[in-house]
Length: 148
Image: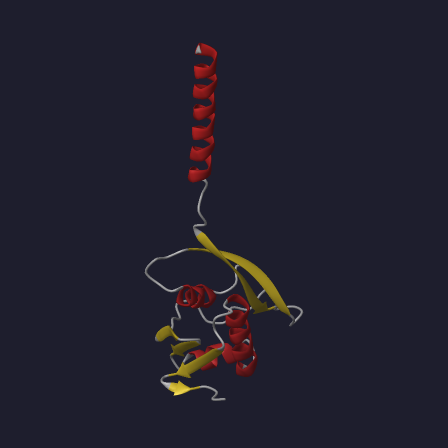
């Protein structure tokens, strides 16, 4: 009887440790994104993996746009915006991402690449990372950039 009791106790302790181990595994605290930037030297599109901490206050799409505005971590890639630039508004409605920038980004972007290329890469970044987004509407000072 004592042997069965000690085996049962050992089993319960071992099972409890296994349960505690699986409960203590870290739940993903970040989102992994692939960002596309234009390479300074080769003028080809390159990728950069980015891990962004999850925020309960901001949607994933808006948080991604904020991270994209910060620019590339690799110095071989063009930044899309000058440091300190921010969007005027950014939100998701249904399957459409709406983002508005000040008109001053037009001249900032065009010193690095044609605006059409920037717009194409911006959309590529959104579509590659968010399958729920099917359309991107970009505005400069409230005027839509391209309407399809």
